[in-house]
Amino acid sequence: MSDTAYAQSLIQEAFPRDKHGSVYAAQFAAYDFMRRHLRKNMTFRRARSIWEGAARRIDAEEAEALKRAKFEEAQREYSHLRDRLSELDAELAALRQEVDGATVPSPSKTSGIWG
Image 1 (tube, rainbow, N blue to C red):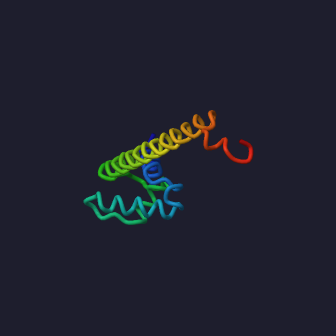
Image 2: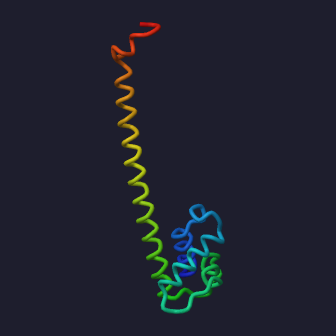
Image 3: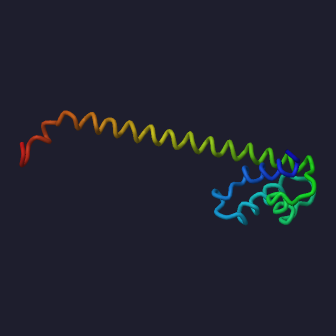
């Protein structure tokens, strides 16, 4: 895999279109991140050319910034998934209590029209 293709896959994985809502927004997020993490001057056009795989070369500094961005995105996603799993565990525990409680009707539920 060439450096350009590798950088293209990194930037698209680190700044997924689905998360940002559009390709333009994802490219802008990539530009903003790289601008803050590079010593050299970064332009939106450069970020877009990396995104599209049109860049002729990839600097080592750019590749490192993209690896960092991908790592940070993976950490964010992992944290989000752990939080979601905790929420689901709590929901399942509540539903389990509800289901287990419904199998044996309590005395208050038997009094009424049918009791």
